[in-house]
Image 1: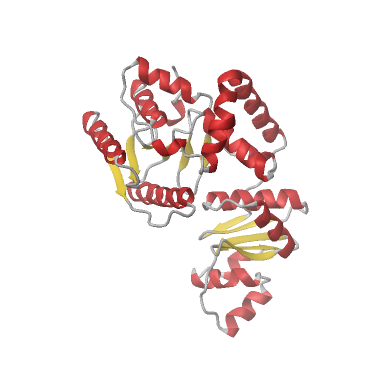
Image 2: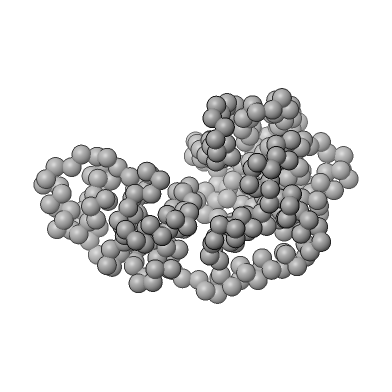
Length: 326
């Protein structure tokens, strides 16, 4: 199994590790091509086996002289466990990446994961960009997320590990169909990939090319202190795509209902985190702020045509109003 890792040959890389099939295979595939990387793992302490998985990660790091970062947590609430675990995981990733100046976070998402995502989005009602949400490279604020296994099936990775007598663990919770992803995995995606893998890979390639050919400029006109200002494209579909991409970079995934509410209200706070305002000429996006503003500052913002729900953040970050005039 020869993969092209040239895009991360010169970067400082951090591998998201779990000791499962996918990340264990990726660990040794990266080693095989002499890619430099360290590893990061979160132990949720939900299973007795998780202690062995963490120890396996430590053993690999020691044996192959890798730095390892790990976090042990206990999630008390079982409601929406997957989202809570994901939020904890990526918050830890972001913290370590920032502290140690990593360029790239490598994740072991593979073809089965990509098809599961596609089917889950399809079941909820989604557009083309959401359906093809798993891309090989994704730019975050200060680093890239790289998913090199998206054309490789889980079965191929397992065969690679077995053939080379490499240890790995199987998370028993992967078989619990109370989790939506597992339901799609066991009832649809795994069987489908086993029979039609090549066609699925080709279809995802074609869809990605279609998106590229329909591409539009989603870059901000201005970006200061996490405040982004975009041109209003005068097309509700394109505008919501711009907003969706901005929020995705901020770790917020919009639901269909939220997208509809944004377009309806124009000025809104999403997930109690992000302020959005769609004005005649521009779209404003920034973190929510509760900073107190005096009347003089409010009046200056009014004259500068700053949207009301954006003003507190500008005050909090002491952004010069003159820099926001186009």
